[in-house]
Every structure is written in structure tokens, then in C-alpha cells.
Length: 347
Ligand code: GTR
Image (cartoon, rainbow, N blue to C red; front, side, top):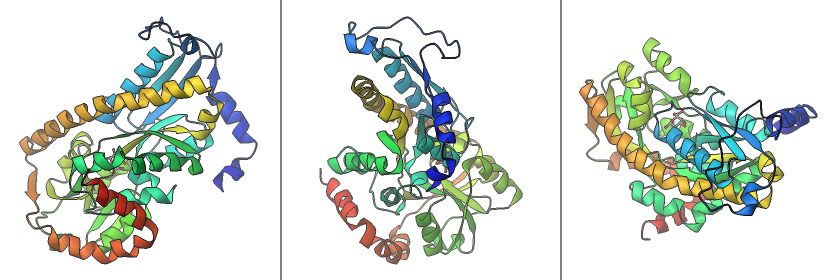
């Protein structure tokens, strides 16, 4: 629907965004690294300079994954395809970036699957609480056929999923002491904007305040919100721990990260270039997962050392009970994929 509004302006945006040989803004291409022994198809074809939008800073594991992906694309194309990674939300907050990617004005992005729920209903499933046991379970599902099908389903939303990245688990943190479920009652909790998050907070007795990630720090500081929720790496790198030093680990969501290309950009690429991009994305996964593990531990150590009070929920049952009716209300929509997630556990 949104696409229509932009009408003919779209052509102009695309022409500007898809920088072909000769109009690359004077970007000097590195000499071909040529690791593949000079495969002909990679060396031939137009030169491109694309942009990849990333919300996190340069040293964050997703940004490192993006850069690895860009480096691999550059190598595999013998220097023909350059992807410039723009960290720290320089190209905008996640929701705005996704809209730009749908239009083809930004070619690539890495976002949380949580942010995709309002753009593609299938993605809502990741925001349902306590559906995965641990990271291993998440990856068993992501790497299964059902996980790949979900990546493909983004095509109906003008995007194409290239690869999933690790994102650990999300838990609550507040400026007020929180050590148990009851402490969340009546709290205003910032969430990534999507319908399921709003229902989830209600089920836990709180109220959801959707807002962009970049506004959370000041909103916690000024008391516009009482709490937020995220994984250790985001809690640390965003400095939220400085203004919300009480963390309660319930691990309610495991919403993976995803690397995307605009469908408009994808459709313009040759088969050979598509292959390069897909392969590079898949090859960057292991690197990102390793970086994630390291940074997750490091960020936990750092927030603890800085004096954050961290409470692990001992008995998760009451939490699971509280959200059961809400999960059931979504079973009609997500029953099949929830069964696939359950099945992945045994793989
Ligand atoms: C992080 C995620 C970001 C963003 C952020 C948020 O864990 O990596 O892409 O979605 O959470 O809460 O907005």
C-alpha cells in the first residue's frame, strides 16, 4: 500500500540508489583479492556500490557480521560489488530503514526479526514468548527447511532474507528494583513495535510502549518508561545499564537477527551476482555467531562490574502460565510454525 504513495518518485530513488559503474561517487575499488582463482562470472558485470544499514555501533557482533558479509561479497565479485556498512543508525532507526529497503532506496540492512512482525505476519512468531529452550534450539530451527522458508517468505514484503544472525535472549531491565514477575505490574515497558509485544506486556501485567531503540536511553533516564528489555550485548552497548541497573533474566524472547536485501535490488541482479550475495551471507553466519558468543560474555561481565543487579528467574512456570492464553490466541495463525519449532528441538 505504501509503495503506491511514492509512485513515480520510486524510479528516481532507485536510479540514485543503484550506483552502477562510472557513477560510484569516485569510490576507488580495491584490486581484486581473487581468492577463488579468478572465476570468470564474478569478474564480469556491472560495478555496484550498495549501502547496508545497521543500528548498532561498529564493534557490535551484528555489525562485524555485516562487515564480514560485505568483505566476502567484494572478494567473490573480484572487487566489483562494494557494500558500505553504515553503523549506529546513521541511515535511520529500524522501522524507517525497513520502509526504505522495501522501496529499494537502501539496498541492505540487518534488523531484528522482532522489527519485521508488523511488515510480514509470518515473522511475528519469533516474538511469541518462551517458545525456544535455548540458543541451540533456535539455531536448529533457523537452519531447518522451515527456517529457510521463513527467509523466503519475506519476498511478499518486498525484501529477501539472506541469513539469520545470533541475538541471544531478551530479558527485562528497569530503573526500579525488579526481582520477580509481580514487580512488572503496572510498569511502562519499552518494546520493539509489533502487535505481539503489546499483547505480551499486557499478559505480564505491564503496558507496552513501542519506541525506536535510539530513544530508549533518554526515556529510561527521564522516566518516560520504567523498563525495557533486550539481550546483554544491547543492554551494555547502548549504555542502558547506566540508567536501568536492575535486570531480571526471564529470557522471554529469542528473536534472531536477519540480514536482508531489498527485493527491488535483488530483481536487478544477475543470477551470478545473486549467488555471490547469498553465498557470502551464509558464509558470514559462523563468524557472526562466534563474535556473538564472545561479546555476550564480555557484556555480561562489563555490566556486572559496573554494578548492575542481575536476578535470574528461578521458576519460569508462573511466567509461562501468564502468557499461555496469549500464545493460544495466536495458535490459529502460527500453529504450523510453532509445531515446526517444537519439532526442531529433537533434531
Ligand atoms: C537489539 C537488536 C536491534 C534492535 C534492538 C531494539 O537486540 O539487535 O536490531 O531491534 O534490539 O530493541 O530495538
